[in-house]
Length: 223
Length: 249
Image (cartoon, rainbow over all chains, first blue to last red; front, side, top):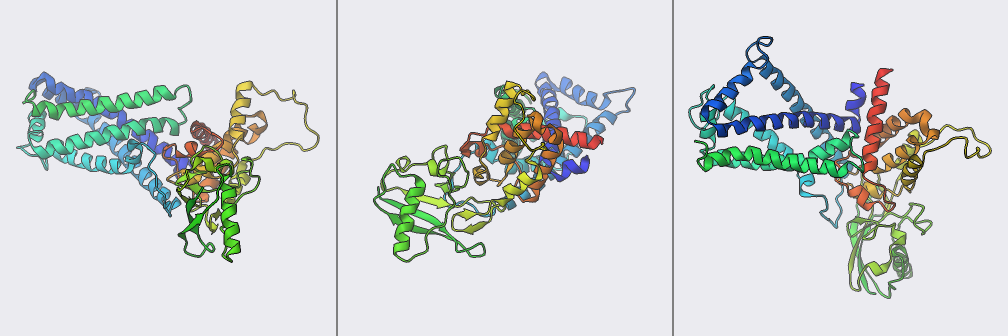
């Protein structure tokens, strides 16, 4: 079964769809968590600490967090690997371009590949910046996420990288969510409008919700 | 009408091709696109040049033989086959680019003619039903719900011209394969091979070197028979169902 799925273009696309939906679900939770920054240092830092204690006493400190991290890494790797392999195949299947070129597919559709690469690079920077603190702008202190976030968004490049990535994310989700539904056979003529609306709403809400944080820091609402 | 044509000329499969420019005059707006090319070829033959090779057969829009990418559109600006496209869709003095279907699974044979036998092999992999031959069976013996009959008929309209592959930026044959799979899989006559059909046809499609689907929708826009993009969704559903069932065995 696993072999059948991975060896087929249709199956590999299903892997891409499922891993994408897992990441999308995580992003919705992540965004809601981020918005707690607007309720002050204490609530935000408390929330961040709670994330490490989820499931206690059954789960030890940070166990749940690590389970989530492992699932996400598997999803990212599966998504990127299937995307890379399918893209290589697609490019090989159309070696000669038309002399008379026309652009027709929408912007979101055309930017899926490069948008995905941008998002991959962003994830690396984002983890080095706010999880490990390796490339953090101020004095990174784990356990003080509120101050860390303010530090990052007090730099011009922190804001630029983040906002560009979130715009790319919105475009990626707009085409990706609807496509995932088609790939998994969940689309239909009667459901198409609803699916497209959900894709647009998700894209808009996530982009706006994530960008609210740097905008909050820039305008001084969060400091 | 007086037109400038830029046509892909390629001696054979191994040769390098290039766009060549020709002028044609005295074209009537009532001519079909293929008749316009016939006019060009008559002139070329009189001049002792090699006529432009292109595929055509019924010229009624039902056989799927004609295959030209006109100004970047498979079958040209109207939603029909090239043979049913008329010169009234163009204006006097226009420059028209004419190219063959482009996909590595459809190698160019000569000029505008491509080898579409990859489609035949996809059909051979599962585009059939097991049925006793002989006299036509009694029509009421196998009832088919109206909705299923409509669904099957919509997909049966596919003429296998390959415009979907030509239009797809990935050179994918998903719309063709899905039309054939859905047409047979929804009917009781196609039920015995329901799982093997979709797995084998998609397997053959991959083996032929077609690309994958990225849901750009170009195929359904180009399809002269209006096969909907949702056809691919239905095939994906069938494929996942078959893969699950195969996994259980």
